[in-house]
Image 1 (cartoon, helix red, strand yellow):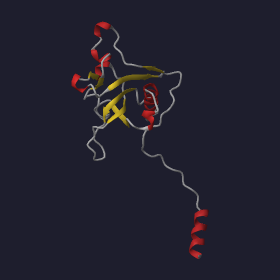
Image 2 (cartoon, helix red, strand yellow):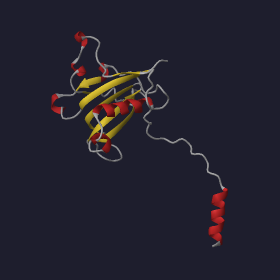
Image 3 (cartoon, one colour):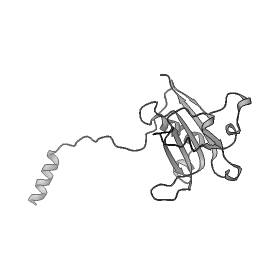
Image 4 (spheres, helix red, strand yellow):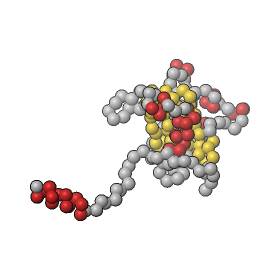
Length: 171
């Protein structure tokens, strides 16, 4: 009984220490009206317009190189049967992807996004990967049309409803 009383007294007498920041996913942050979203990433003239601008597309291997040497900084993958996917729309999920990019690191660290349905998840946590998801990939530079490639005909069941866009904010 005395032990419980001592422990209770100690717990009440100590103050809570503040939590230190922790690692984790970026928080979706509303994009201010002073910024604009260029969506989708399109070519500037019909003469230089590659098929990637109007056919299903995916990031090139170089585009998926991690930020230490390439532009890829973060991604999240939502299972196709998740609440967010089944109760959301393509535009609401794309908006969340942009807002998560805007909330990544310091403002301006993430400059562009790519979203696709039926995107094969990468291997992680010891699993083989390959499960189809809605993917949001984020990049530390403005991703242009050259950062992507057309999905081959034999893989068109994957990488569907593809979009890429840029967040532009005044300096």
